[in-house]
Length: 163
Image 1 (cartoon, rainbow, N blue to C red):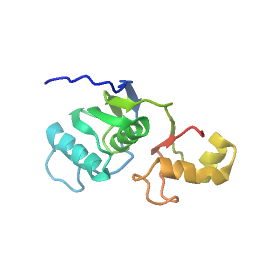
Image 2: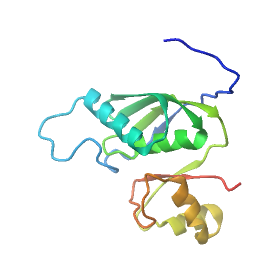
Image 3: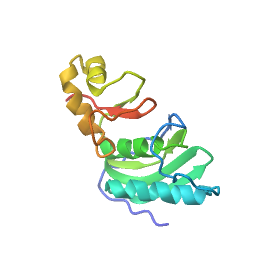
Image 4: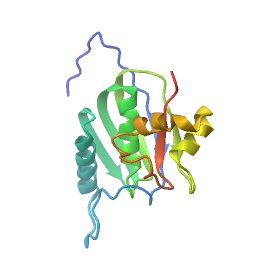
């Protein structure tokens, strides 16, 4: 592996993010009769991330039980957070060990775990003081969210700072 340094400023802010293991998208298949290997599951996660078109360079995901480790380079902090959420909001993943690098580092968004009775407007009122700012949260979680009314308990959402 060769590392080429450029004049671009690249920051590597890593972390371990926790999720609810049995909540989330069923990326690994439904009704499988045989145990999938961690390699198969990691490949399914890579394919899932690629379908969103996030543009992660050198994307690599490894699974160790319910922990997903992810490497790669993204241009923006927002993209990095979306990748972490897309992986973590997958059924069977309890935590994401983020080892991605970001070319243009910005302020990190907050993460929020949805509870029963939540709506995007309720969450917007809690974080922004205004329930009508729910589209900010919806847009910040696209393409994983496709409908403002389709969130579920245990799902983790990005709550960006208002600039």
